[in-house]
Image (tube, rainbow, N blue to C red; front, side):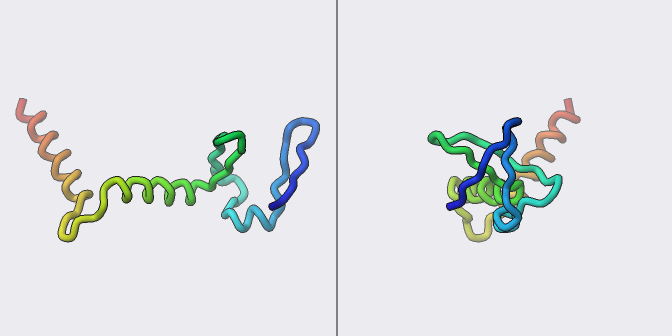
Length: 85
């Protein structure tokens, strides 16, 4: 665990070793949330991984089923119905 100091204007410097470990690059997007009294910083890449994992657990893969293709087919059918009106 590291200890960081906050400057008078509220800025916190994240040491290079931690930035590298977390995948924080200059000008990259970092997501911030408060959870149980803690400040959590997450890289965009890690956030994407977390979101994919969350939804993968909600909809376990079914052999022979491609949910992306099903979604695209549903949208195309819906668009065709709208065009037919």
